[in-house]
Image (cartoon, rainbow, N blue to C red; front, side, top):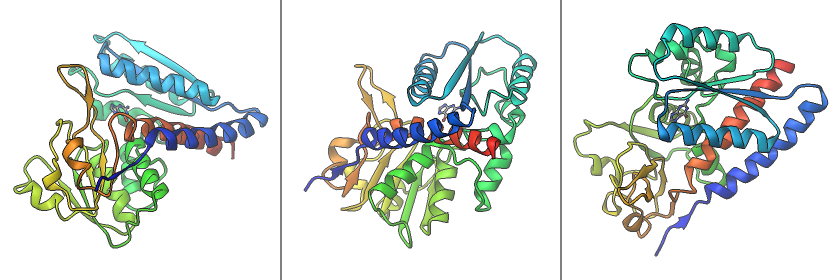
Length: 283
Ligand code: GUN
């Protein structure tokens, strides 16, 4: 038996089309949602992500403003730019692409973004709201995963959910969202003693470690739903996830591909968050 493939590309198109309709309604009221994307330095992967985010905005009718800054800009200068965006009425969402250069304190930069414009959902107040069950912005990648599970009718109520990777961007908010949806959640990290023993219990397994092929078919419960958040480039230039697809697809019930799985959903949910920020500003 082979798992069914969850088509993130198709679902993301459906979400973006819905966003587009709501953007038109907001435009009719004289408001065009605007996203500012700040990119510091020349990281090649970040450049691709930022370009894709801006292109997706434009396609859905949102304004995007990409602010490219030299890698050696001071943190103070970056904070001034963020503060200006905080008070800019044309900008409803602000995203500072991570990782930032090593001389910067990412937490301080993120905390400087106005919480009501923090479409990444990384600000400490948005993290706190999510943790206490009153989310304002859900971080885009975990939000996209929840949309995928919903569209596949995967019930989390009472399910065993295992998340591998405990980052602030994916793992921790993913665990919170699934917990809120009624799952019993295990959050694994790089010190987890017997990872396979944990992953084999999962009805829903989300892998976000940045380590290619880390989860193999023998670590998956037959019939489980496997969500691969990883995007890694091999030496041959091929994109692969954190899950070894070839062995996993034989065991899982459903699985996301890389590319074409979680990646497109992350961008779609960024548009949703930006649209909703603009809708709130208009209310
Ligand atoms: N770097 C990798 N993923 C993300 C993301 O979702 N948001 C931002 N701002 N930076 C990232």
